[in-house]
Image 1 (cartoon, rainbow, N blue to C red):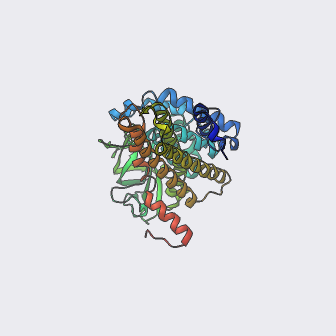
Image 2: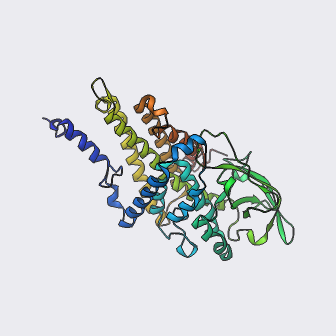
Image 3: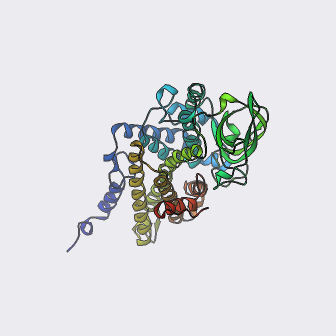
Length: 411
């Protein structure tokens, strides 16, 4: 007995395949996840997608090739509401839910992971701790300027000798009576060369980890840039160096103590990455699908060959699975039920999925896949950073292992 697919014409089959992989707005959505989103979610996603198409997509290949961070994007991100979208409106944020935040990160990373890093660091790693753990004075002073893009912020946790083990940090603050002295260094810090403010984590004299707000211009504070990156070339990355920096006591985050502070910030950032990496995967998949339908070999489109269809079918399957996980995680996050382990699983899954899709898409594009005419190699190189920052791929695996067994394997 013939199936419906067997009796379709080649043209109808191609139309059905494309219709099944995208929704009415042109978004890759094989299982109609739009039916789970509100009208506000859809409007937010569309507005950010339009912004990316106008401001990022026409320029990103040039910026990446040149290793250039376009600083004018900071203000533009502020104008479109990409900074701190879940922060209450009274502090300049958008007052949105976490699914909205996820969709914003997804669409920005469809444009570029480095651009998404700029936005997610600002919102999740700088604005979030100031809002959650700062004083009212700190919120009023810093958050509106960060939300608008007047100021760019960064987050100082990773050190030259302490990455996966942040509790081993040596950066420290010493109480001098009317102020603190901050000494130490942080490494691999997104946004640092251009930042006006840094949220830094340091140990006090009792060995407790405290959050410190450091401002550009404080004597002894410098932000050397890291050059010659093969990844995240359109974002700016550097160090934070502190040499007897005088920190006013009102710049200490008063409402957090210990490693819980920075780890909760990482949870927020990892949530955004879980959504963002899906955007990179979608961009690679859509480019590969379009190319395979246009590129002819042996007298017909390469999309008609079984091995290419296998690649494409597996891509859309994995994207769909990741979309469902991210959506469910967003629901749990909105309800205050999402656990750190769940966020780790989603981050790890999305990035691994996206990196695999980028590599498969590169093969579908053949030699053209290594050129800047297509986004594939840029996404692939970016994802090589995303798979190790905000917790490495292996550490996230062990977080899940510890959660299901009750035994920590990374200590």
